[in-house]
Length: 564
Image 1 (spheres, rainbow, N blue to C red):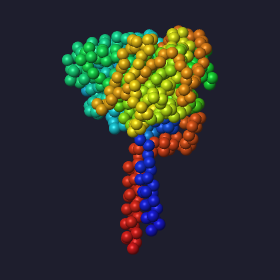
Image 2 (image 1 turned 90 degrees about the horizontal axis):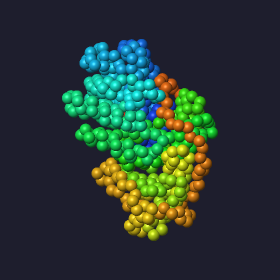
Image 3 (image 1 turned 60 degrees about the horizontal axis):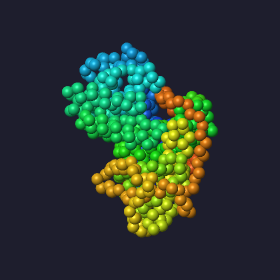
Image 4 (image 1 turned 135 degrees about the vertical axis):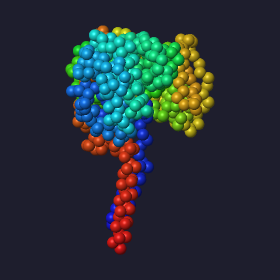
């Protein structure tokens, strides 16, 4: 009887654990190489991660070789345990597979039929998709081919025509193994060659087989850094280019960030841009909001942790090499918490400030920041009786509207870079829950003289049921700040800025980095993998565990019956 009771208690414990588990992360919000600290990634609710699959590392010695240690199963298992999807980037030609330069050279046999064993690229793609079938379905084909050969950061030494053939072969070979494989264009930097996508599509439309295969790609990938306000512009340009060829494809922003140069734990003698730790945090909040309002299907920060970072190089990581967390990590957690479930998004850009409204169904999040050095107070119509005003570090307070409106004081931007205000000021979130009647009906929006000709408002509907909340009322002249509004004053001391150079390409071979104890907020169990599972409630393992408990109970009952 004791064994039966024990089995029942185990089953009840597992069922109660399932009922109490956290919802799965929003798949729209990702990070490059989240496996480098899976505990921090699980805490932050990373919904997907991008991992580099180097051909030269997976098959270092020939087409029959396979080095599974390059991407350990542990990384994929940790991601699956917390509901984080893995997206793979295939790149880096082995020396044995090209007549050109190792790494960037065009694969030998690329023009041969994909069934020909001498088409080395087709053989590799077919094999890698077979090995990871059921665990990975998104495949990004190469990286940043728009950087010209010989330019710092170049990764593709072939022509546009060569890249089209590379993509086509990958599409056909992958779909032989997995008909549901999703093939991504390589991430484009835009600034190195603004016409690359158009030149690529010009080649693609000359292929009579392309239309039946969707031109051999399913997703466009973009890399946008340093200036969040360029995101809507580049998304619009990309959509116009696709439309010129009669195409409509999802767009992912799979790299974005603004690395700081004032981190006292990572000194830099020179930097491409003058960016503070706080500005990096604000950049993420602004960039993710603008990407949503631009219709991005998914967004990822580059990158999660600074591994193998040479001294003096730009520190993109939300986590430092010692796994301590920069302020941008806290901003990322605000994104996965208060941007999750967005149904529609709208940008209202004005001369002195921007508001992005995220309609999340059960809640509305408005993301606000000043665009210039001027402090500005913004009047917003209330959507509920009260709201939560949250700063970019996560500190929050309850605010109450007066006459149906909130007055929120926004500190001006630091604007220390020689190029001007590349990143807006400290960013705030106004979160209101649905179901609470507004204190008073919002009055009609008014515009001051300085705001008579604001830029057009961008609205992106991510669901047919979405509706847009009322627009804010700008008040450009600073006014007295109510007691329920922030009064943060940022530092504005400019420093010299070196000329811009392209971001360095990540090193080739990822290595497993032991997870260090996080320096911020909740302390988890010391075992990284177990802690990651506990944080998200084991969303992929609980059916198995419940089944085990049921089997144990059944065996116990049968044993006791036979004994009786």
